[in-house]
Length: 360
Image 1 (cartoon, rainbow, N blue to C red):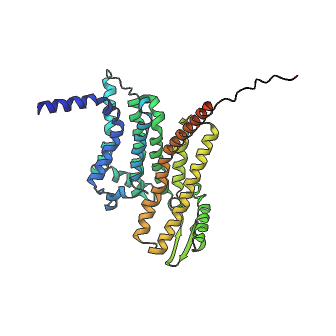
Image 2 (image 1 turned 30 degrees about the vertical axis):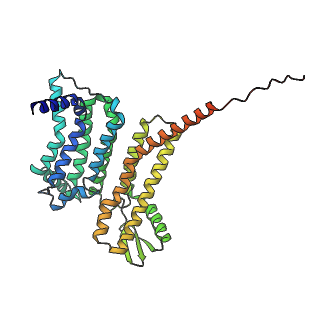
Image 3 (image 1 turned 180 degrees about the vertical axis):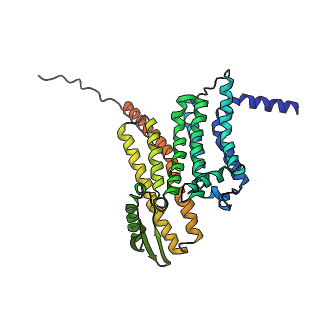
């Protein structure tokens, strides 16, 4: 037994550098795992908060993608990530430990020390419409700041360049949630500008599918009344329903990723344009799917709610967080094809030069 314990200790010690390097990832994994396993409803926000991992919009599912982006940075840049902690600086070590604990402390404060109630109540006092959704928006923003803080303390200024991607992602989600809380029902005009075009394209696709579509306007938002063999569905379309948030997140995440890639500006423009086009088309299909489900099950059905708040947003986000990998794979295949072509040209037999004398 002692020999087994000794071997286990030696194995852990030999991998200690790996675990220490991964601490910034664990700093966010631990509080999210606790929230998921405990599955506690917030005593101030009501029972709906118990299902925060089961919704994308105004839920915590985006935070899982945030953790994935941190893990992706470790996978792609492991050799270039170097810990900058000075072991002789005791104050610095204390700051690192405190920073690593802050995400968990924040989550505990939300649920056990009334932080969520304080945020919601303060939001109500200043006239925010969806004040009960402000704590989750604030959580995303706090995680963004803590991500940058932990990265700076652990890996220095150079580390910020890599981990800026997940920090920006989670920050954008928080900002978008906050904007919708303050200006609900499509009232934020800059985001609403693209919605009429998206609705028109969705109406066109639904028409191709054999549905009768009647466009209109309601409270400044475009509406579609769609009728099929199974029934009729009518929805007003605001920018969150049209997936404008996914376009914003795609733009920020992809531009930041492409900035780090050793590509020509033409290649970067091409990758961005292609990815943006796919993201926009996914949003069109998202609206189309909501209407087809609505005609079949009814506009207030659980099927519509599940797609609206979970599966619809997750389509675009899966594409967005996968697109950097797609770019890397495509670049790898392109380099392999170029190398193969160069090698094949080098292996071609040279034509023998003619030894015939010039008659002149």
